[in-house]
Amino acid sequence: MDLKEKLRHVQDFPKEGIDFIDITTVLQDPKALEQSILEMKKLAEELGDFDMIVGPESRGFIFGAPLAYAMGKGFAPIRKKGKLPYRTVGIKYDLEYGTDELEIHEDAIKPGQRVLVVDDLLATGGTTHANVKLVEKLGGEVVGLVFFIELSYLHGREKLEGYSVRSVVSF
Image: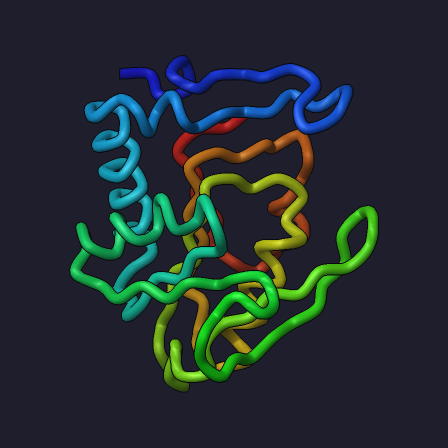
């Protein structure tokens, strides 16, 4: 099955000029969802052994948790400031229209653990770069980054230079 063809494009969402790529059409189709996780698993296996998967809210949870289950790994969520219930470590990062802050539980990653970052989409790379820095702040080693979709025309890989980046579908 061609997963790229299963994705729905929504023009002018969330604002005019944006071609939003909607993953819900893949999530609603059991075979497409299974294939997306299996293909992400293959990409993750190419990166070698690792201990944990982290994924940012909310769509990183959608792909990261089932991938962790399929690979027999743990999963740790990265969330916006104030959303996690235990003590956290945070990082501020720049957006094109301001700043944001992400957090992870302070005990989610142990020093020296090898970590895979998983998300639904790589666009400009800013949020992913912040995810990587959070993992490293806790002493984790990022073995690579796996995405379901990559918007290669936004050059997100450039912001992630030095890290192994893999994606299932590219536009």
